[in-house]
Image (cartoon, rainbow, N blue to C red):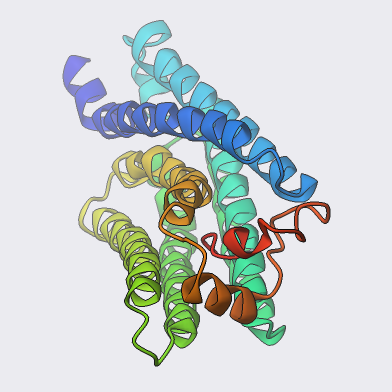
Length: 297
C-alpha cells in the first residue's frame, strides 16, 4: 500500500506543499496591499479580497484532500485509486481564482492601451480556458472511480486547458510588454527609461514564468499516464497566479519611490493621465503626478 500511495499521491502532496509556501506569500502581500494602498478604488480592493478568499479556500481544500488520501484512507487502495470530491472542489476553486485574475489583468491592460478589442480578446481566451477547466472538473466527478478512467475520457480537455493557458498567458504578457514599450519616451530621460525597463522586465518575467509552468504541466500530462501526477502541479500553478497579482500591486510602492518632481513626473502624468486604481478623491491634487507612475498590470 505504501508503494501505491507513493505512486499516486506523491505528486499532489508535493504540489500542495509548494502551494502552501506561495499561499503564505500571498497572505503577506495582501496584508501589505491594504496597509500601503488605502486610497485604491473599492473595486480593486474587492478583487484583492475575493482572490485572497478563493486562494484560502483552495489551499484549505488541497490540504483536506491530502489528509483524506494519506491519513484517513492511507490503507484503502480503492480510495487511493479514485478521485475524491475534495480534489474536484479544489480544482474548481483554483480555476475560478485563475479566471478572476485573468479578468483583472485584462482590465489593467485596457487601462494601459485604452483599446476595447484587446481586453475583449483576453476575456474570450479566459472564458474558453475556464470553460475547459469546468469540463475537466465535471469529468473528475463523473469518472471519480478511477484516475485512469478519468484520463481516458477527459484527456483531450486536459490538454486543451494547458494549451489555452499557454495562449492566454503569452498573449497577456506580450500585449502588456508592447504597450509598456510604447510608453517609453524617445527623449534622453534616463530615469523614465529605467523605470519602464523595470516594468517591462517584471511583466515579461512573470509572463514567461507562467507560460513555462503551463508547458511543464502539459509535458507531465503527456509523459505520465498517471493523471494524479499531471494534476499535482495544479495547486502550485494556481497559487502562482494570485502571488503574481498581489506582487504586481505591491511593487508600485517601490516604483513610486524612484519618482521625483521634474520631467519624469510630467512625462508620466501626461501619458497616463488618470490612474484607474486610485479613488476619484485621490486622482487629483499635488500627489496625482506621483501616483500616475504606479505599475499598470
